[in-house]
Image 1 (cartoon, rainbow, N blue to C red):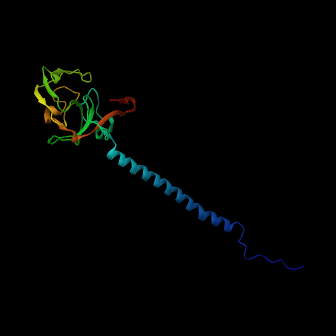
Image 2 (image 1 turned 120 degrees about the vertical axis):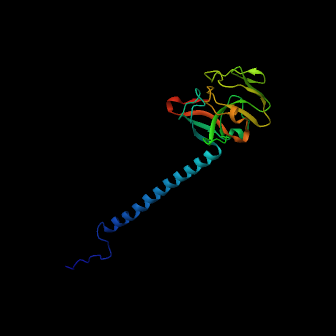
Length: 201
């Protein structure tokens, strides 16, 4: 009987296969992680671009827009709409604070109550535009405080007020005058938070 010859080139059982599997496993895991990372980064970049140029999510601070808006509610703001159209009477807008007070805020939320070419005044605790008293169902009181003589708005000038007409509760055009269209950041479209108070504006 001839002695059997063992194939010395054949890998020991299981050893070579185990090493190959171990080598591929980390590579597959890293590739999947990299795919997820790229997806997240792309999504984040898209959201940043959209937030800068298309929309913004704004937090209501203060009580100047009560009863329409309450403090800490969050708004979806359309930042592109006024590239194609002008602000209209009654729209709720977000604008840069034009005041120079120590408590100046980056942005304000107000309602457009008069547009370019119109004459606005406050008398007998009511708002008048072009001599006509305004019906304002979004307020819960007459205008408290002093009246205001007629002011005619120039080109791209808007008169904005908070819906809270109680004395001293809203810093608006009665205080800092009319605002330029270029100061208006966008139109508030709806409240999206809290979920229980989702509603259009």
